[in-house]
Image (cartoon, rainbow, N blue to C red; front, side):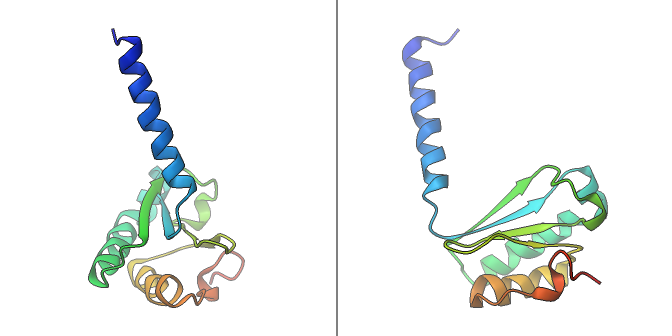
Length: 121
C-alpha cells in the first residue's frame, strides 16, 4: 500500500505532466493505433512520421498514439495539431503521404488538402 505522501507525489507529477501537455507550444501529431488503424497500416505510417521528424531534427514536434478515432473506414488516420490553428485530420494515410504531411504541413505550414477528410480519393 502506498503512503499518503507517496500518493501525493504521484498526483503532483501527474498534474505537472498534464500542464505540460496543455501548454504545448509545438506541433502535436496523433496517429490512430487501434486495431482498425493497425490493420489498415498505421504502424508503418507512424514509423515514417517519426523517421521524417528525426531526419529533419524537428525538436518542437511531439508524435503520439491514440486508440480508436471512430472513423475506421478512413484509417490510417493522422491528426495534426498546430498552436493557434484548427486540427487537421488526414485520412487513408500511407508512409509516402505521411512524409509529405511532415514536409509540407508540419515544416512549411501548408495543409495537404487532398489527404484531408472530405477530399480523400
